[in-house]
Image (tube, rainbow, N blue to C red):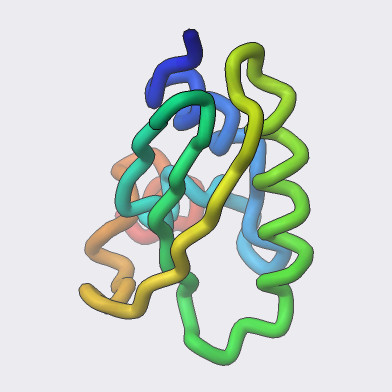
Amino acid sequence: MATSEEVFDALKGVFDPEIPVNIVDLGLIYGVKIDNGIANITMTLTTPGCPLIETLEKEIKDLVSSIPGISEVKINLVWEPPWSPARMSEAAKAELGMI
């Protein structure tokens, strides 16, 4: 059975195309729940008009669906709470020279 930790680990392999940091460390992933093999991922984007959402969604679905025990990946895109740099991990802030 797949775990949410495995999904988070896989998501660390997805990088924002415009920022050289993965989407987990950027703070874009708000939650992961697994129910009967379905990975439900709640996430946001750095901006509502991000033109690369389709690219990110495909990469997320490809990576997460490769985890044994995951039969489907659903992405719930939300805008509340809004993303801000405060959501970034310390590692992401260091990578971007913010600390």
